[in-house]
Image (cartoon, rainbow, N blue to C red; front, side, top):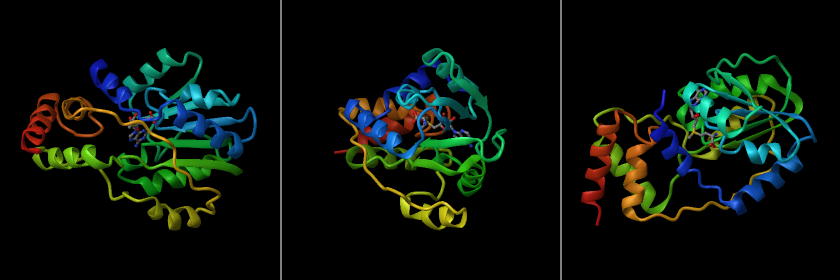
Length: 224
Ligand SMILES: C[S@@+](CC[C@H](N)C(=O)[O-])C[C@H]1O[C@@H](n2cnc3c(N)ncnc32)[C@H](O)[C@@H]1O
């Protein structure tokens, strides 16, 4: 369960600006049938539901966290919400036209199991869109690594760090790469803002709010 402040911090870190959202919308339009059923797997607070809906898709958000789903209900009323682990979604075989998976897989310990389940629910000609997540770059990456080192708890991050790792897993599931693309992201922040975001966002640094704050502040004070 996340606090309102943690959910706000998470939402504040979504990095798709208008340009990135327009690119995502075009990608969805060429990958998915019109008016299909789209599973936003690990869709969280529904930050991208408005983009997914623009196509006319019926969106189902599936997420482990009830507080994120409550935020999704407020943000996108009328969206179907399912609270479940992606390794065991209560969804029938072959019943969605598309799966959208953005910034989630890096948090799932059994990410291969989650992909297996998502392939099961996807109908054979459907499309799976994956952004693996956790891939900060530059200063944000340096600061998070330094804070992770100072966190008293193990960092919540699995072994999935590069898109190429998906290839053999997807091929074994009978899924073939149709397209690889880069979306335009927005990452403007001062060092203080980056530190505050790191301290406030439980997905980037595990532990209590005060443990995250201490690790993030220690990382900030040691940066040059
Ligand atoms: C960084 S957020 C991304 C949310 C959303 N996809 C977006 O792009 O705004 C990661 C989400 O994955 C969810 N999550 C993590 N592990 C999960 C799992 N095993 N099953 C379902 N959801 C999971 C978290 O609860 C959280 O809402």
